[in-house]
Length: 282
Length: 302
Image 1 (cartoon, chains in turn cyan, orange):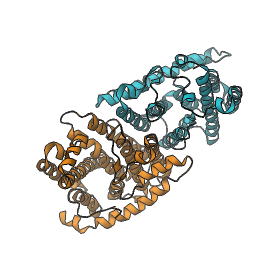
Image 2 (tube, chains in turn cyan, blue):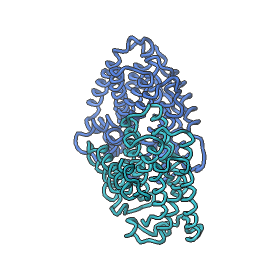
Image 3 (cartoon, each protein chain N blue to C red):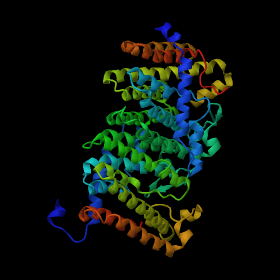
Image 4 (tube, each protein chain N blue to C red):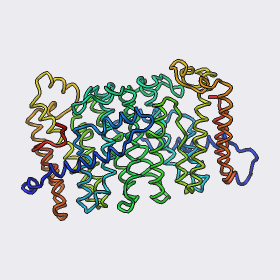
């Protein structure tokens, strides 16, 4: 509403992210309450509410709003996306995987709660994501919600996140915009958003790889230089730093082209998001 | 009732369903790139000798209310996927540290701990996706699909099977009932409830299925523990005591047998109201007797 009253030439991405991120944080806090057994729920909340940029859930909300939905319709799905993302981080950090001690500037989940609880807390977040989305989404036809649940499942299974970890490219793929189905997007619109998401997902990874070799642990809030030590295939290693930066620019342009057919005012959060991912420093 | 359930040929009913479910599971997890993860997933889901008790329970509960079994198969497969996923994670070195499962090396023994974690992580969502993409829309309304997904997620989640596994590891006095209910009752409960939901059962009928399925699930495990105790040497017994909680280990054989009889009675009592559905209720009775008596072997690869 406010934006309509004083249209500004530059979209204020920072306050948009802050405001939407706050809503997401509140919704997450309310969704996962402490129940018995307490320790699992504490472990779930420890990682889920550890801050983080909430890029994925905000993207989900923005995509839903772009095609005519609103924040309250998208919120359970947005929370589900963040729960699943958190699950993957908890499991990826385990000693048998990436063996990370630090995440978002805090000790990793298994360092605090033990490996067994970390595995279970991840599993529980994954399960709750689906329960929450199926039970708490209101205001849309069940057929649309079923489709969106299918999208979410696909985005994490072997075709999505898990496959990324297996082939060790870590292209987490911000596929969550498939959830624009929630907002009532047409097939064509959802396809465009899917391409957009694929581009910025890859962009996210390229920039992550670049930051890993150019920034310190303190600046990143996680262990820097890890990819080098772990002998991972990264873009700077494959292409060199200069070509990696060029690739990042190209992906950003390609992502933004997908948005050209939409209402530009409603697309501005997504445009700003792409730029944010491209130019972020941590 | 007793008589009818003996006359009913459960073994044939069950064996036929296992073959159908095995075939559908085989198709549901084709090997694609990256192959390693699919192989690990298939290894556990398609393990030989699996009894497919959750899928069979789900199909039988669906048919009880006149539902078409085609409506139940995708959910039946999903139950097997999420069940396999939680067993893979339960066996991990940081959990129960079990090198074998169903007489074969456990998933991480073959594929490594990292792959075993990922295989589980992939199987959970594959289950939900399979329900969404394969449930015939002309047979099951979307609202039912959403309730089924929520039910499965609840059963495997932080107040269900994950809670059971947590208490099994972390222990605490008097937790045996809780652990058994959660680790073994949830799957039975969830399977029966899903079948009812898919067939459009009334809420009070779903509640009865809930209690029935839970009792059968726990009963099966208590009897398993009793059978184990009979064949085990003292050395093994020590191991069992250390490793997990069972009624037999905690209360001894006599009390466990008492509990089993109570559960048999309880499970059958929940079926009382379903007599009006005629012969369709017979498989559900026979599951109770099978769980208690093990009159025959099913699903064994031998």
